[in-house]
Length: 142
Image (cartoon, rainbow, N blue to C red; front, side):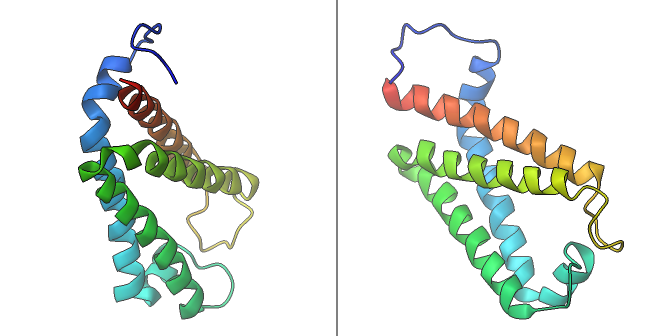
């Protein structure tokens, strides 16, 4: 664990201030996406993921993963000892999702949104989430 005398990096103060609201925003985003998948899976498929034939079961599976992660993040707002783990899980998922988009960039279904914007935005979300992970780990070490 990092001690409170460890060298601070540029952006550490911002990450510390953004820790709780950032965690809430990321958690809420996962929950909103999951709700969209459950409430209107056809719309989600048509707008975000028209890969292969429509399959409501797989969209429901993806919603369950999204919701589970969202619940963990939101819960960690009230139970801070969970925060670093929940954020690290979100960072890992987002980072792997970004890698998948970089691999498939412009090679996925022509009707999909899997383009440079998605790969870049997921990469940015991954990096921002890593900053929150670092802040949560620092706070847990105090």
